[in-house]
Length: 362
Ligand SMILES: [Zn+2]
Image 1 (cartoon, rainbow, N blue to C red):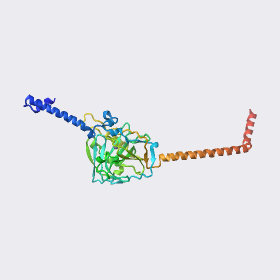
Image 2: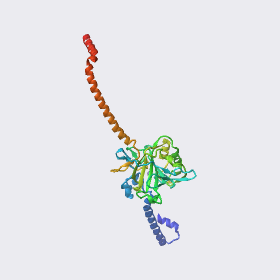
Image 3: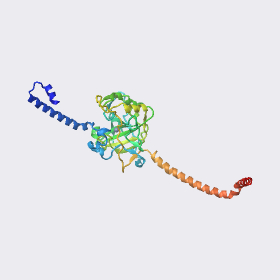
Image 4: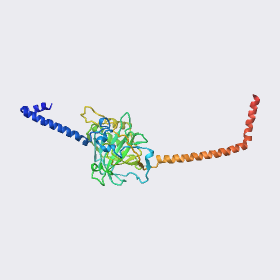
């Protein structure tokens, strides 16, 4: 095939020269192919959620994915610990004016919106500036696509707002592999009422249907994507949930989910493709969530007492009440049985009479 191409390109060349050129071209092609294939992982396109590059294979190319502090995890009562020092999350610059623009991109793994570093999270040890946000979801048949789970239960989807430590590092890339490099705010999403804030992103899905497509979105108040209660959250040290899985993320997962409508969720689950527009084998962008990871001998801090702590208090409180009720009942029973003995004659007199009467009748 290559020789044929060369002949077309150099029809007047002698056979020898043509063969030399062809061999050189062949070598060049082999080199390019080898070079491109080694470049592929750097482009981040050599991993997926299913198939031969699925998450079980991630650690082979990305060793951190098989390492420590991996995310996401399941939040269950045994690992939760109330921490009174966890302050409400403070957001700065999140209300982005209409005149500014966000870039929305289909990166083949998710739909991602670039954020301005003028947006930041306060109330952490360092200042963390926003880099991007993206989503994780399931599919229209199994609408369980959140990454973090609560008591083993998935939510429909999950939003991640990624920030980097801008006190210490110049940009996201530099910060991404540092232990204190990143902070992600995570929002659990469930089906409920229509959400106009999410619609500011979702209404542009048709413009980024295929991998590498981009579009611009006018600025809006990004805080509208978060739940109202910014003081109740789970906090732990974990990792990026996609390769290279660096253990560099301080996670804040809000306790209260936000709602989007069933139609909006369906848009998310069906509008996008992981493949480019000209791909002969299009692949729907679905189930782009990583499975929960082992989380042993560590604790998740929680900023709220209600729920699990309340249930412990309630359980112990209820058992105290139950014990007291039992004791009270036993005392009353004893007293009333004593009284019954005293009043026996009075109570049973009519009954005895009735019995006597019925016996008499029989
Ligand atoms: Zn994510």
